[in-house]
Length: 150
Ligand code: ZN
Image (tube, rainbow, N blue to C red; front, side, top):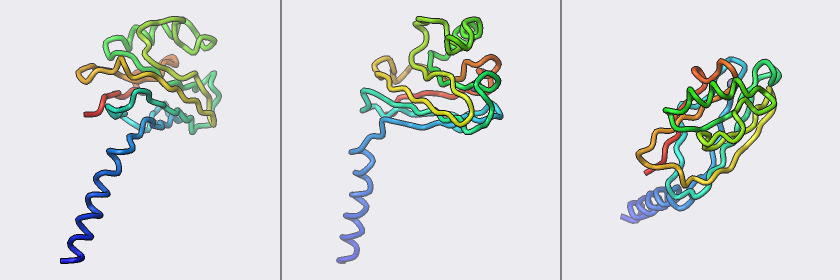
């Protein structure tokens, strides 16, 4: 009986833990093989702000294998990526002032990292958001879904 109660208490504590401390941050890695290491990232619904850390685990410089982390509505990805290529590396491969870009890091090279903290007000439960790398030629392979947790 006694062991049963302790086990129940431990179980309750374990369940309460994650709910009380929402992780309003995530880390994603990018490599020299034009890949992100995550296919999706969920933002807990209690997070008013969210921090994304991008880490480039490769060795190649940003001029040839640069990566950034850009979020837009899924329907806008192609347009944002195309305009970003035209804007060039100086502009982080994003058109300056592009309102379709909801959040983004800068472009980094191998061994570097960058992070961005953004307000989550635009993130709707029924919205369709994609994160991707806007470096020329990367947006097809390097992309995933950003979702709002329940
Ligand atoms: Zn990239």
